Amino acid sequence: MAEPLTLHVDGFYLSPYVFAAFVCLEEKALPFEVRVVNLHDRAQKTPAFASLSTTSRVPVLEHGEFRVSESSAIVEYLEDTFPPPRHVATLPAAPRDRARARQIMAWIRSDLMPVREERPTASFLHGQPTKPLSAAGQAAADKLVAAASAFIPDGRTSLFDAFSIADADLAMMLMRLIGTGERVPPKLAEFAATQWRRPSVRAWVERERAPYVPY
Ligand SMILES: N[C@@H](CCC(=O)N[C@@H](CS)C(=O)NCC(=O)O)C(=O)O
Image (cartoon, rainbow, N blue to C red; front, side, top):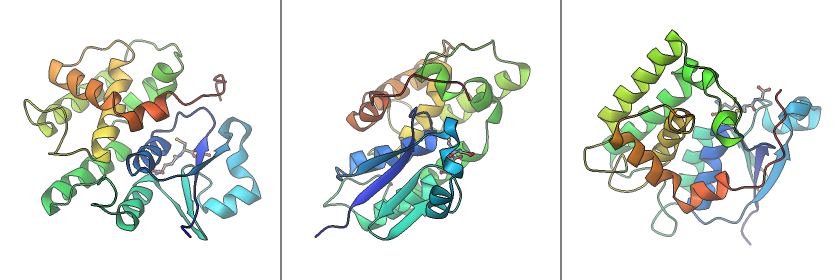
């Protein structure tokens, strides 16, 4: 019998890291249970979750007895454990494309902090108000637009020939701007809109969320 999969998520479905793991499970059509960790109640700090996660952060994936934190590690684990052709690929197979996908995923997780701070996911997922971008926010937004324009080939609405989690990650980052009324070049707007329509992404966006409480 298949070992059960459980994804530990934040209650408001705001985490871009949970998003990547969730979309990966959906793309692969894997049955999984969701367990909510209410970050605003500091539930991630309870001894039970701290020992389960090691890092006291979401997402955490449980697969039978195995547990793994860190969204990119979860994506890699799912890709290795549930590979194509039986399951949809969520990372490119070709080494250079896979390296580029990993590059984009690592970059999104480690750069552009002013955009993440000034355009948190609550701003476009829960309609939380935003202020005009600061100089640092605008510089980071410009950097995002320039890099995304270079990464996405002209005439395409995906980074590679087929979908990868890097597409979803990049679309989420662009939605911080698009979803709060910032203008981006048409190629990027089309890319983000296409990715945002994917059923796996819709499953996360349309998930029933607890009403947002700032924390
Ligand atoms: N590098 C981690 C980041 C995970 C992370 O920072 N999760 C946040 C939610 S977006 C969290 O659990 N924060 C709780 C805390 O910091 O106490 C990943 O990619 O999974």
